[in-house]
Amino acid sequence: MSRPQTHAPVIRSLLETDLYKFTMWQAMLHRHPQAQAEYRFACRNTPQYPLAELLPDLERELDHLCSLTFRKEELDYLRGLRFMRTDFIDLLRIFRFQRDFISVTTDGDRLDIVVRGPQVHVMGFEIFVLAMVNELYFRRFDQGPAIAEGRRRLAEKIASIRAFARDEAPRRHPFQFFDFGLRRRFSGAWHEEVLRTLRDELPETFRGTSNVLLARELGLVPIGTMAHEYLQAYQATGVRLRDHQKAALEDWVQEYRGDLGIALTDVIGMDAFLADFDLYFAKLFDGLRHDSGDPVEWGEKALAHYDKLRIDPHTKRLVFSDALDMPKALALYRHFADRVQLGFGIGTKLSNDMGLATLNIVIKLTHVNGQPVAKLSDSPGKTMCEDQTFLAYLRQVFNVPRPD
Image (cartoon, one colour):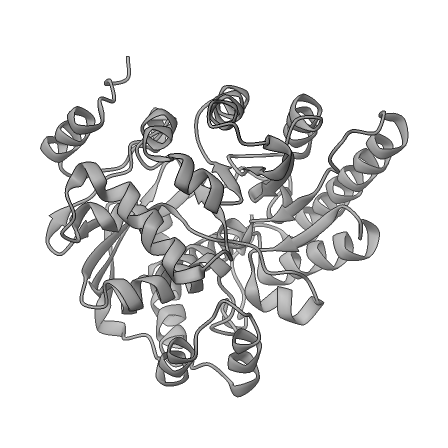
């Protein structure tokens, strides 16, 4: 491990975030512009050295982030995405992050990061801050050996996909994957190298990235629709709690009118989601995204649901994005590829597969309008809520049993 040297800022553009931040931001601007929100940082594993040591560098990175504005060419790029509306681009033209809305302190060895303010202002902090913490952390390690190992592993991935295409019998639907690794990347420079390499080496298989900046710079398709925070926010925006998923999905349909049609299923859990995902939504949405729980069980439930509704699954897409690596993605492809269209969003195992133990860090929405909100994941370790009374009530409303 080496001590960090002087570096350029981690974030170089306000486009350097995931596409779904923009799509959720626009939807919330139009549907709930007055919502107040609180987000909190958590590290789910034990780092090799205390994250609290990053505090001075993180403060400087945040100051830099709050000095950035969108450039004309960046706004022109966003304006060229047909689902982005003119009034939202006008907001971005004058937008600047406010430093007062985010606080960073330490609690022993831990970083304590709290973001609090108008949701349409503060919801954008998440991806930037996670990318900052990750890159600052991994700058402490020897870069040369890590990059060399990363290149070796990337070459292995490319070789494995080529071998799969050569040796496996053709399936009804093609294997396609994309990058979801911005928030936990080793570094911005490495992330760009990975995407440039995949673009050049696997043009038929590698289909895009969630990173809007690199999508623009490398000529890739920006990928993403919604994240957990979007559906969570509807738990505290005035609709009946039991109806919040339906309300969120309905607003999404009205906002995007057929674009961005992949729905996230695990804010309350797959069973509770499917209870709300009736024929109306199943026809309107292009497919579903898996982000927790057993992926094969989840996929079988999705296919059974489409079958029950008499919807041809070959017209729909299942997107898998939960802690994927290439072997898992290929195994899931073998299981489902003759039955439904597929997509695989691979994150850390693309952008930070360097032979080093990675950080499992998140920033999650905890309160909206002063009320607690929760994610009831199909993976118990991913459940996140600061109010156990609300969590118990949410389980009761949606008939979700407590995990054993």
